[in-house]
Image 1 (tube, rainbow, N blue to C red):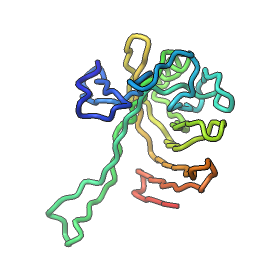
Image 2: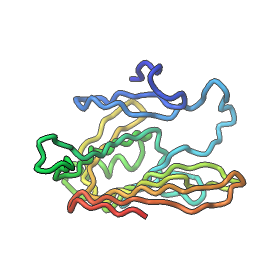
Image 3: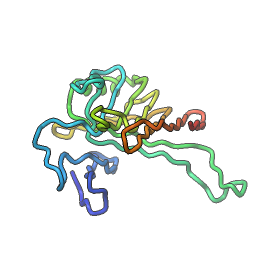
Image 4: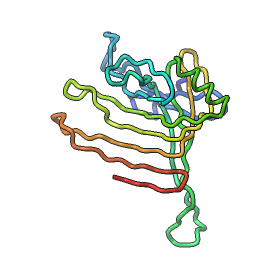
Length: 199
């Protein structure tokens, strides 16, 4: 359930994940104090594409995607002060489970099946969308590969699914004030062989 918002950004609320995870997941507010969403039509802030599953979007170009109300993940490298040299290097990169807050739909069936069977999904892609010069453009894209589904939480009309991944790519798309593309930057981390490639 949502908690006190005073310590977080205005455009998000924090949702406590049911169960024993103790994770607070940022979710997008449907409206804020400056904008009332009365038309019933809006570009989703975030969407997710789960490969080998059914999407349900009517947004052109993203028909196989699912609207994403919120998501959370964390990556880190544990640094120990008793390392063998002065660089305080450590041995292993780490990535948390990835939590997805979605509306219930056909994809729930597949995720539950994968959890029960221990199956692997080839990829999950999270994308941040915005309208740029009257066209829907991606602003950020995170792609997770070789995904092992770890859990599914029922939350009334929503579901909270979580998975772990062997590789993560984060791409950010840049635009100038006129809406012209200024290229992109990306970083790919492989958690199996502890490598990072940035472009």
